[in-house]
Image (cartoon, rainbow, N blue to C red; front, top):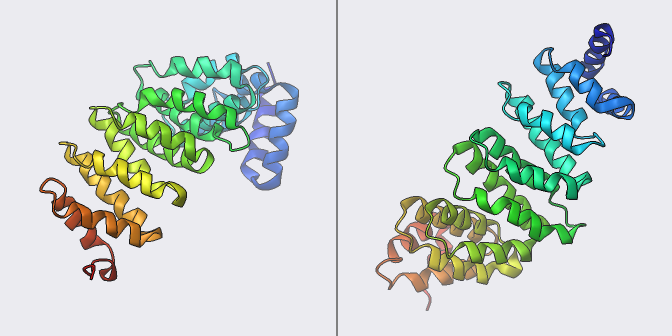
Amino acid sequence: MLHPVTAKGVLEAWRRGGASRDQLLVKLSEEDALAWAEELLPGPAEGRRLAAALLGRSPQPAAALEVLAKLAADEDRHVRDGAARAAGELLTRHFADAYPLLGAWRGSEDPLLRRAVAVAVGVAADPLHLERAEPLLRLLGPLLPDRAPEVRGAVEEALGTFFSAYPDDTFEHLVAWSASHDEGVLRHVATALGAAPAPLLRRALIVLRRVALSEARSVRRAAVRSLVRLAQVSPDPVAEELRRWLPDEERAPLAREALGRIESDLTRPVS
C-alpha cells in the first residue's frame, strides 16, 4: 500500500487542476493505476474522482471495471460521471476485453450501472474506428426500452454522439428500432432523428412519418420536437413534409403543432 501522506500530496496536486492534473494522471498511471486507485478510494469524493480517472488508464481492464462498477453508483455525481467515462476509455483502449464486461452491466438492477454503459458507449464512439459502429450499437440497443430516467438521458445523449460518428449505421439501426412497439424505444428513435444530418434528412422524415402514428403521447411529442429541430437546418423539406400530413386525420394535429412552432415564413401556403 502507498503511504497515506503521499496520497494526500497527490490530492493536493489534483486540486490545482490545469496541466499539472494531466501530468499527474500520466505519472500515476505509469506507476500503477490500480494500486493508486485502491489507496484513494477510502478518502474524500475528490479522491474517488481521481481514482476513476486513473482506472480509465489502467492496462488491466477487467480489474479496473470491477472497481468502476462500484464508483458508477457512487453517492457523488461527479464520481459517477467520471467512472462512466472511465469505462468508456477502457472500452476504447481495450475493446475486446471490456466489451463483454460492459454487456453484463446492462443486466444490473442498479440503473446507475446501466446508465454507465450508455455513457461508455458514447465515449467509445469514434469515426476513426468504423468497425466498432455495429458492436457499439448492439451494446446500446437493449437499453432503449429502459424506463429509468438516468438511463433514458444517457441513451439519448449517446445516440446523438453516434449520429455524429456513424451516421449511416446509426440510421439503419433507428429504422430497425422504429418497428418496435415499445414506447421507450420509439421515443428514442423519434428524438434521435432530430439530429439526422442533411444527407439523411428525407429518409429521416419518412421514418418520423411512421413513428408519429404511435399511440404514445411521449413518442408523438418527441416526433414534433425533432421535426422542429430539423426545420431549423432544412426548413423547406420539413415544411413540405408537414403539409403532406395536414389532410391525414391522425397526423394533422402533429403537423399543425410543428408548423405552429416553425417560423411564419415556413407556414405560407404553397401557390
